[in-house]
Image (cartoon, rainbow over all chains, first blue to last red; front, top):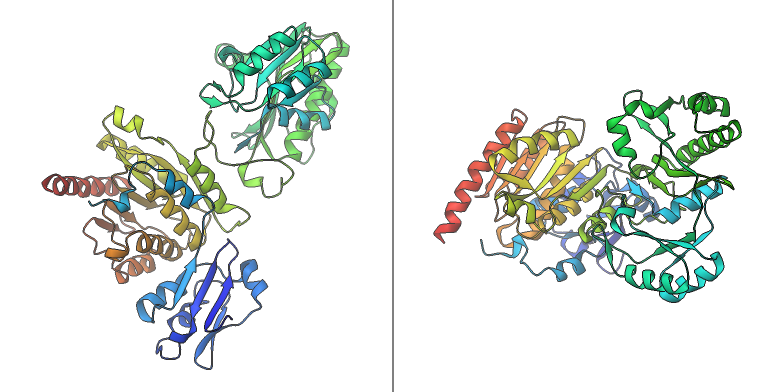
Length: 109
Length: 423
């Protein structure tokens, strides 16, 4: 935990950041509710009103987190938009920079 | 599939006791000169590209001395052979060849077992031999639990009038070793063409090894850049990036190939290019079969199956949408045990990031057809996140056929195009 952010890495390369400053006032704790429902182990648990990790970080990074993305999407809909999952692809941003034609999602269509 | 370069394949053959010509690789003119000195003239200069028919394309040439070697090397390095850039040459001793044989091991889909192939008439046109005189190619199915013995291989090549008894024994040994390579490296194909009969014995003059892409996780000593099969061309940058998605993560697979990277084929045929993703390669083919006659062309093939984690779907969806010029996106799942709510989450996260202003509703015609396990959960998620309400989105459920999905996409695209022309 770094200050008020809970961060852990995931197996495919990337990280989950939970802005805990938002969590005390969150009534749903939707991230905890959905974690573990997707067939993987429950890795988030509520402790003293905030989500905390139930397993050591290295076990989570080795595949304990099944990267269902449920926590981020549930928090986005039913929580306080406190979770950001960052999943980089090596070389992807550089590739986008080389394109001469505008990408479809940047177009005014 | 990952195809090794000739020089990489030959090093593997050498480790398994199959004779290869003396040779080295060179990546510059000075290296080529040095190899010429070490190997001794005359030499063969061979462009290292992943393509067949190099000889007929100027990619294999003989050099009698240093001046000729320099001329050929400077011409080849930086040039393209069959559209592929040449940055490495294999320079080998030139051989006096008396006869050429074909030897290979591959998978036989009918018997679902390895099969050893042998043809006394080897050389550059083995494909033509296979078509014109299929009986000339002899086959030996192998039970992988038993393996193959020299006497099995001898039986395969018995009656070959072109070979003496001693030569048959050499060929039989090489066939057994070739099978060992096939098994040890999880190959789809191991091929020597030609296996040359020389005064010094049998020598593998050219070699091809294709590794099963799904086995690369344990073939870590191979210097393989990308596992995806891209025909006879080098992988595109986007294919290279897509190949990193699976990496060492075996929780489901993502196979991505750009069929028409610059959209030139679609434009030439007046077809409408679109991005494409399917759960299951079979569903992909049947959906393509429905969409192409309607005037559309998938610029990529993509199969996301084996129950991939949501993060893989997120990454590949972003990648598919980043193909410039696409006028739509189609996702179709086959009916399988894949957990489609996770699939939906990956797509939703990607769309929300790509289209933040509309909270994930895309600006191009988008058909999302979820059929299979957890498909109702997937539909609920798309609905709750507002994706289903998108003007250019059609979400389809388990009762939808591929034809209906294709027709839905056509109708959506027609409306979209009318709207675009108005503006």
